[in-house]
Image 1: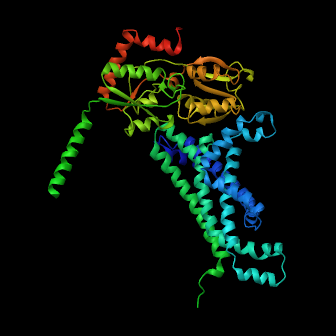
Image 2 (image 1 turned 45 degrees about the vertical axis):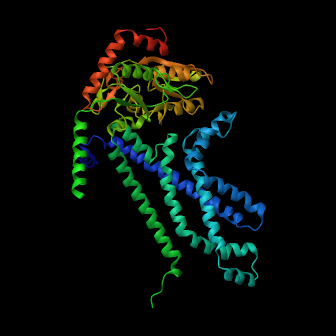
Image 3 (image 1 turned 180 degrees about the vertical axis):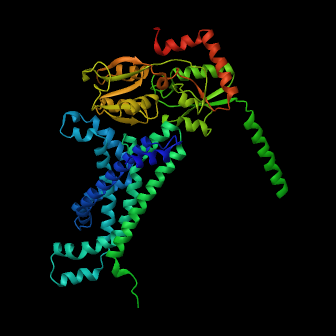
Length: 243
Length: 257
């Protein structure tokens, strides 16, 4: 153990910026960014499935409210949404006394809420497109089997829609990772927050931001790799067959 | 034609090189982080004002140059000077050794202590590791207060860092922060005079140790702009001599001291 720490100190010797301390900040930032992005994507996904089904409904009174929601959240910058949820809520009378305050007081949860609502809006539209583009033949075949609307949605439409949505959704995941860089404006020490801290303390924009860019690149690669694997598995039937 | 072009390009390059060596400033651009009341802020009419602004304009008048104020968020203010977005920084910047490695400072033009500010009902009378344990401390990112708090309290308290002082004041009023650490006059005019809630100063005003709190506020220049710094120093001495300085001081800080 001692060996490792002396080796590590030697490695960093003579380096003013990347000390064990600042690397600790980057590590903390990596943990925060990963948590924030992962949790908001999971929650957004869970929200998006029922919303996408509602959005593709024939009934205006079901699809219109969902359309309004996706329109607003896709039509405004995420940064503005974050400002409203973080700085805006404190102007609601009595919010500090309410049961919500322990949650809203921390910077993490307002950011999580903003990111979740934003990604849910985009994911809803991605899924809706996939649901709409279900082949008519499959639907007719399901009807011919006497499937109810629910059963058909569960067994025929959704499974094939998920597969079609996969490449577009993979992009949304990467966009979300990159969009999370704005979390530092509400004092969260995410990856970008750590980079800004190092930049401000050592006046070293190149070192601070290039290093963090490399970390983002690695994360993006991991996500790309994961989705490549999923597509290979789930979209195997679309690949050209060997003769 | 080609030859003409390359010749004129060469001429341009030579002109640029010579002007980089000895540049006479008719127009000095000064970087400033707004708002930081009462040092630099906007009036209700949107006009830029404050102690730094008035003093800076006075100095420029004496030097016979026109000054242009360029707004820049604090955490990028020194890199902005390096990348020639402006020629000087006059924005309540404390002179300390860490910054001296990056920039050239004028003589100090004012000294300001820092202080802890908290809601009156926080119930502590001094800020120590014991009393601040578990609290959330607000600071402005990249300030000497940030460095001081980070080095001394990050193991016992949570630190929230803000880009601007008014974001921090907003979160103080929202009760997200327990205590903030600020230049004293800034806390005085934003928190002590606040109508939102009752705030108090916790403990003494702080200006030691010098390695954090430095030697007063100075105007910062690029290292090679020694001539410009010298001009500012001369103008500053003149303004302090003839009483104009005191007049500006009284305008923002009253008669005391």
